[in-house]
Image (cartoon, rainbow, N blue to C red; front, side):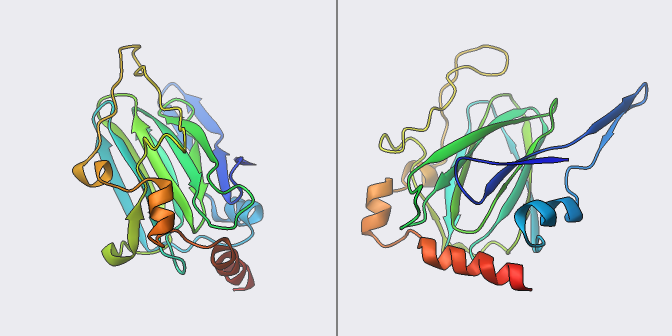
Length: 206
């Protein structure tokens, strides 16, 4: 299992080793010792989610108030998605920066994003299945979103599906109505870098 920190500090790409034979294959998509060695603390597991998405569906950009926010460990069990992490932490040296990792049922990578970061993905195939391990339970009053097509963020979403066909973003009504990054900042919705850093530091002392 190999961890690579992304251009957004506090987020990692995780590449597992796959062991195949005529029966199929086996892999470890999460391993506590490897995770703690790379990230510096254990992953608290409070909730596990699964979504199934049609081709073109964009989910996000979602984030939660800090503390405790909601860290996520994400993989694609079937199909393919482009997974995107956005730095929404006010005061962060990389505020507004994003990075992406292709997740699919071939390489079987995962992405970990720590507290205070924004998360989104776009489905590149019909029936893409994404599984999330979450550090906190979903709390609607603490959850927020930023519009994934905000031109100021400039996320480069794919225009072609996995099979090469043209791709158009499909958003939920809630995500389509989400504020831009500037609007979210003015509204006081964004987490603070100092609060996120302090929360992560507290996890490393546990």
